[in-house]
Length: 306
Image (cartoon, rainbow, N blue to C red; front, top):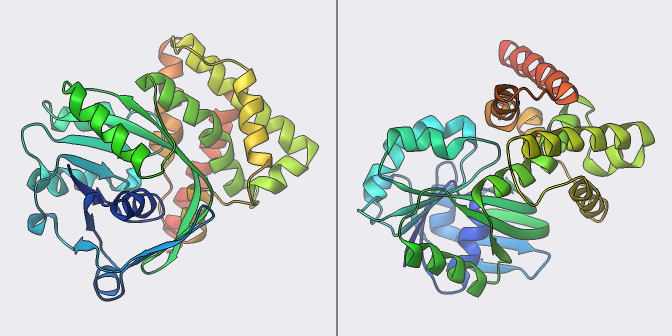
C-alpha cells in the first residue's frame, strides 16, 4: 500500500509519521518546510514516544509524487479549493482519499468534483501542533474514527484501517454521519469559544459559566444530530467529551491557532454547514448560531486589518 500525505502539519505529519515509522510506504507533500525536512528529516515529539524519520519521501509538488493507494488529506478546509489541482496526479482507478478534516460536509463537496472517487472521513481526537519546521508536537490523545463515505472496495478500506492499527494508532470504524457529528460535539463549542473568549480549553472548563455554556452548545449539536437521524449519540456523550477535555493538557484548538496567527478560520465547515443541515429539518442551534456570527465578525475584521 502506497500512501500520500497532503498537508504535513500537526495532524498529517503525526499520522503520516506514525505510518512511515511503522515501515509503510509514505510520501509527504510539503510547502514552507520542504527544504528543511528534505535535509533534516521529520521529528515527531510525542507523549506516546518520540521518533525521527531521517529520510522521508518528501515533495513540493504532487506532479512529482507517485500514484497512491491511499491519499490522506489533512489540509485545513479553507484550502480545499486546492484539491482540484493537487489530487489528480496522485489518483489511480481505485485510490481511496481519506479526509482528516474538521466539520460537516467536506466529502459530499469533494465528490461533486470527483464523482467516481472513493472517499472516507477521518475524525481525529488529538492534541498536536506544528510550531516549527519539520517538528510535530503531539501532546495527548491521538485516536481516529474512520467512516466510509463512498469507498466500494471493502478490502482496500479494511487494509487501511489495519495499517493504522499496526502503526500504533488507536483506530475505530464507525458509520460516516456518526463519525462527523460526534466530532462536531467537541469541535463546535471548543474551537469557537477559545477564539471569542481568548482562552484555552482548561480555562473554559474551570469557570462555571463557560462550563455551562459549553455543555449547552454540546447539547445543541447532539440534538441536531439526533434530529437528522444519527445513531449512537445522546446527552451522555457530552459528559464524556467534557471529561476527556478536563484530562487534557491545556490546549488551543486549530481555530484558535489560526486566529492567533492571522489565518482564515474554518467557519464554513465547522459551523455554517452544520447549522444549515439542522435548519433544513427545522432544528435550530441558537447558542452556536451566535458563536458563528461572532466568528464571522472576527474573521472579517482580521482580514480587513491585514
